[in-house]
Amino acid sequence: MQIGIDRIGMYTPNKYIDLVDLAHARNEDPAKFLIGIGQKEMSVADETQDAVSMGINATLRYFDRIDSAKVGLLLLATESGVDQSKSGSLFINSALGLGPDVRTFEIKEACFGLTAALVTARDYIQAHPDKTAIVIGSDIARYGLKTAGEVTQGAGSISLLVKKDPGILALDPQSSACSADINDFWRPNESKLALVDGKFSTAIYLDFFKTTFTAYQKMTGLKTNDFAALIYHLPFSKMGLKANRIAVAGQDEVTTKRLNNSFTASIQLGQRIGNTYTAALYFSLLSLLENGALAPSARIGLFSYGSGAMGEFLSGKVIIGHQNMLMRGSDEQQLQKRRKLTIAEYEEVFTQALTEPQDDVELTSDAEKGTWYFAGISERQRQYRKK
Image (tube, rainbow, N blue to C red):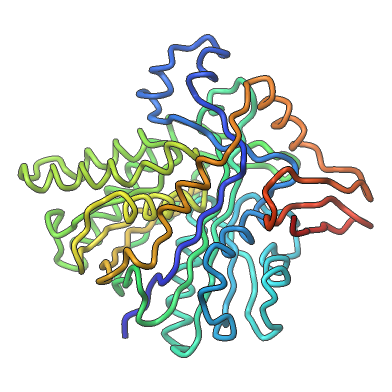
């Protein structure tokens, strides 16, 4: 029985900044951001968008095209949680109108969370082949204004429908994993801003890639040239490029060109949206599917990494006709509709979003009609509404 990804929905907030503008405002050479980091734009979440609302909006991109009565599992993977106890996926369950019999909970392990949710969903479908599962990665990456990590911020969500006989990607059964107690990145309870040791985190990321990719090849007998594409968790595209250089080292010209071209296709969305933590690898997948040239049954390798640290290498095969399951035109339209902020506007929006609204102060959204948003807190309970 094949199990895998049948639908992919994306959402990113309706505001962004151009990183050339940010470079000028920070007295930096734009090439440092465009080439040195490999980013072009950065989505900006205002106070009305959080992990929950973005997760709702990403899922709604495909929700009217599925049989919602078959959904038996709903998982939210996030490191931008809105409550220390209640799962953000319960708010999403309510907004989608799913039944009370749907297993609903939240998963956390930094940026690895959505892969953990996907593997959990695969195992669930294996045991319940008549059911489907919705797994969501939704995050706002914040390091602070005028910090070293500012250029690697972003916001967005990816929602995946997992089922048997999928229409987009059939997951292979094997995967290789690696974990270690490492302090390369963390966010204390009292802070909305993450702390990171950038150079150390990059070194661990690359070490985990080499470890898991080597173990996967040994486990399966597959070689680098058996992959049509290798994609990576992308906090910023230059980080993935370093991993891809390791992957293609010593390969023949045809393999190297193929994997370099597929990597270029996989970074298109991330370069415009920025870091999305749990969703970042799967924005890479969506970008590859929408911009790459993949033959039916082409094998894609996926490297997932979450600081702290957890890594996993898994793979899957592209399904014949997968292009018909994608929404490339509307995904591009969503990006085109974003409003470009000046740096002064961005700094105001960013700062405002760091403070929780006062109780019983209702928030209003400037998003387009039909968008779900965080509407404020009433009696210390979060409120979500549809525009």
